[in-house]
Image (tube, rainbow, N blue to C red; front, side, top):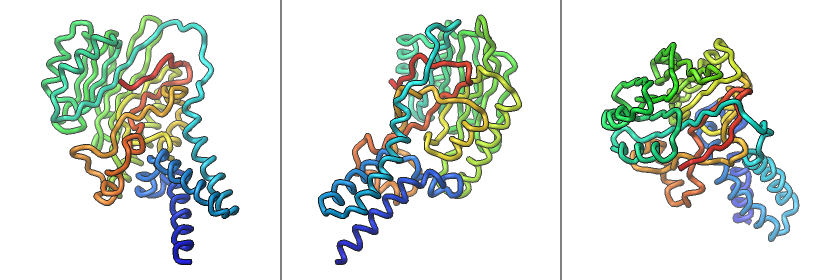
Length: 309
């Protein structure tokens, strides 16, 4: 009897956690746990199998409904949007988050030479990497915003970058760079960002402010060719992210290419809550990796390919 009661309580807890992203704008705890949709889906599937084996029909149907809701929120990223057969011009963008204290300059230069992007953004960059990329003559247009901390960022471009402004969004808490990227046939407004992570109440409030100001900045500079790029420290299931997408009419370049997780949940130096680290450490990698780096583009921009290398 006690087992049945505890098991049902566990099923209710998993159900609540899997739907927490609908409340992620209201509390940092909901925002934090909302990112682990693959984990919650896996637990819901286990719950579905167990309730079916136990012949708990009502609980089984509950698992089916909730699992269906969560599965849709994941599978939608594998459904491609309709794109035109031809494009007037192309822009290849490369985003790399190296970690401030790691020297990855040789690896980054090798990857750039292999893929030949038009625009390179490096976050959490250090001076060694900045010097290495400054030696690349193919990228004459360069902007750095260095604070000597994990918010440092820099950009290199093949195309002219004018009207550059730094720290245009929440300068007290995050780093940003804005500029007009001049392609042969279009001018693309470009916003590079690194938003705060919501590990506790204070940073959660900062994050809400940052996303609100990002939306205001984009809307005050209207364009159908916007590119907003960076480590946004949140996933597509966050209400803050979804509110930004709704308010700006931008869309995610990974749509149609899958979740494409970019960040391991547990790694050396992670500053998440200790309880969460203890729970997540033993889990397989695919349940802990999160898609928190994004390239958001305007309605006139179509994505030919998005990948994580």
